[in-house]
Amino acid sequence: LDKPVQVKLVLLGEAAVGKSSVVMRFVQNDFSENKEPTIGAAFLTQKCRLEDRVLRYEIWDTAGQERFHSLAPMYYRNAQAAVVVYDITKASSLEKAKSWVKELQRQANPNIVIALVGNKLDLVQSTGAGAAAPAGDEGEEEEPDDATATPGEGAEQAEEGEQSLRQVPKEEAAAYAQEAGLLFAETSAKTGEGVVEVFTEIAKKIPIE
Ligand code: GDP
Ligand code: MG
Image 1 (cartoon, rainbow, N blue to C red):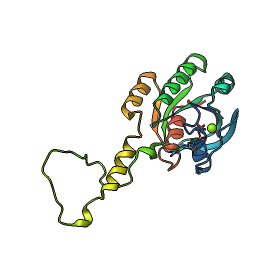
Image 2 (cartoon, rainbow, N blue to C red):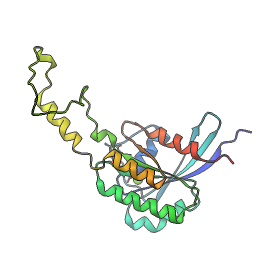
Image 3 (cartoon, rainbow, N blue to C red):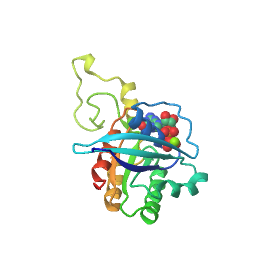
Image 4 (tube, rainbow, N blue to C red):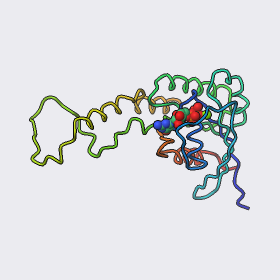
């Protein structure tokens, strides 16, 4: 009676943005630093449980390389959902993502649910607590009495270095996604942040047959 609804989903995006890693996080809850690039495409399945129903994603994880571009229509042709991934530390990957969205909106199923996903969020996050404080030059100098409360200079520099890795502001990608009618999220396949949520939000938008 409560047979899961099959939902065909395709992953698109530039090579090395983390498509396979996002899928591996979603399907196996796992991550590997040295993933070999996908050749052609890989097929995986995973169930997704909503409050009122269960979906079974049939996932086509495509290769990002340009030489495989001509194969992409085979994978998105009958897809009900697409996850278009870019790397938030690489601005050009958002441009590639936009071109995939354009192609999907022209050529894929008109009802396709598309999610734009900015991956590698872990690379721009600082690990230290209270990291939000900006390092201003002006203002009163505070010399804490307690030496243990003073962050080391090295730590401060590392933090700034991490922040500067971001090349795509979240607001910019979110604004584009809204304009184009896409779901939007930032994720880290490495830590798992935001990954399951992407597939859950897509599932909620898949019409009940
Ligand atoms: P694909 O070509 O889009 O399928 O990308 P892969 O999943 O093969 O990932 C490319 C590289 O980026 C690999 O070395 C991954 O380990 C790494 N990677 C993928 N996702 C993340 C992430 O969220 N954070 C970090 N730090 N590295 C990631
Ligand atoms: Mg891959």
